[in-house]
Image (cartoon, rainbow, N blue to C red; front, side):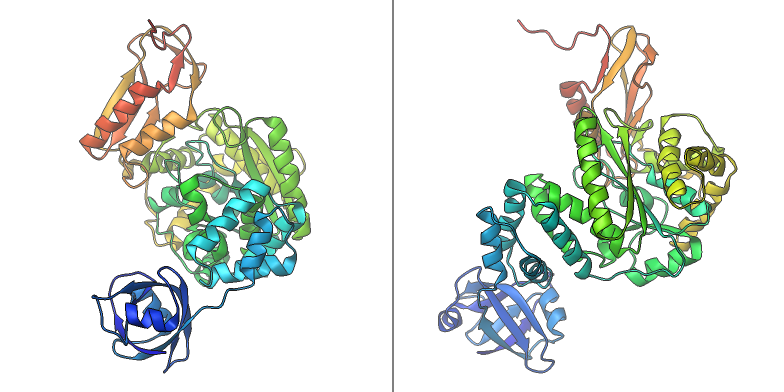
Length: 502
């Protein structure tokens, strides 16, 4: 059936057709159709919506996204037909029934997800099936390989290419802003692609964006890495492993991250970025994604095994993630804290020690430091100022100000110091409440929002001392954050009365 296209400037990807045309095509609301431009012969698969009033029979309203895919203008004709059920649906049902997918079935699913053949209603069951029935190591490898093939890949002539990843889940885990320039300062390549915050107070891409732009194409990432030695960019803009970005959209509402899919996601992104060596930070402890060291070792073994299957050298660092890392949580606060360490060449504190430990493993794996001396070598690069200079090089090549200082990153204009109710020692700081307070204050969207931890675990306090300070760019968000702080009590002091029950 031929229809005349009416292009809407709204950025949606559906097609709106008249009810009479829907009857002729034999399609119902929400089903998928194939659109073909009669001029360019390009195709797009999209879901269909039906109206008897918004348009006339013989017309189709297309959103800007679909029109761009078809490379057509207003008034041109398009052919529309009902989509045949793809073979990938049978594979999805197989996984829902607890079956094991082979390479061909996995390839069909990933290809149809990336190309838009599968609808949201068809992708969601696949994500749920991975969560409920799991993936064995063969299925995980297949998924990783097909994710790699779903987008662009980087390739570097200089070897080895190093990367770093954190499983995440811990507030204040800003170590990439220290690890990446330290590794690059050792004359190694590190094309670090990273994510924005999903449930946290700031992803690495959010933090880096306070210092420089982070959205670049894959070709730009490769060119910048070759020139500066490293980059810290948002993976969502690169078209590297786009299938994973799509699947994440369906995980997010349910707050699930199937283990096999998580493994495939991590390693696919590293392999597609051209990395030969990868060190993975696995924070463990109360409130972290990984509950304890035993679970951490199991996860590490799986990542190492998958790395071998993909011809990558992988080592994992089990770190403590039972409370925030460093003293700051929130975009400007965290970026300033990391930059301050590099500026002052500060070798003290848990943040720099963890960063050096992780960077040190990478330096040893790459052969630029002897076994057991990597952390010291990383510390030397920070204390000698080379890591700071390399960070400025990275900021400059990504379009930021090479003269930026930590003092140029302001905290929010509104703040409130939360005081200790009595004398004692800080015995715990809970991750989830800290994240919830920082997000309520506006992070990561509001760069000045967040929390500064005036006291950390083990430190003595007197009644009236400031335990932590909440910052916000908007006064009403500060009030919202304070309410959550009062309800959750994220910082506990020895002997402190938590609540009274009568």
